[in-house]
Image 1 (cartoon, rainbow, N blue to C red):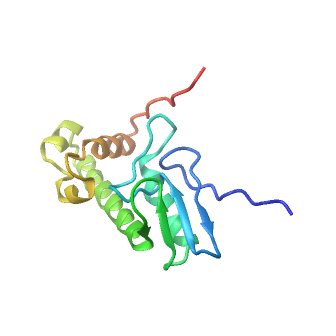
Image 2 (spheres, helix red, strand yellow):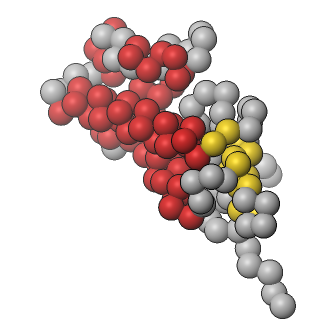
Length: 152
């Protein structure tokens, strides 16, 4: 009997993310789509998409039972509630940036406003959110992503 390959998730951390759900153990391994030490992020070297992060996490929530144990790509064991929290925060940050974009604010203006400071706890110590702010701003305004890193 042929094995099924892990489900491919929407482009998020990279352009080839997958999750593995171990049904009998009720454990999901999310790879780097979800990390429990802070918020997941897109890899600028592997075709990631900041706007796909929450969608990929929603797909995990859709496919995996609520009581499953979560093995993140980095950090300690987590829960499905932790994944839902990351979805909420990513959506809220995206929406805050979208409002600024709609108001015609520049990236510099949004940075000076410390727009993402309400999510400081989720970002982690020493992270001012500039990475997320820049990525959301660029994605929402159509600025092209950096080219993927390629080995020759």
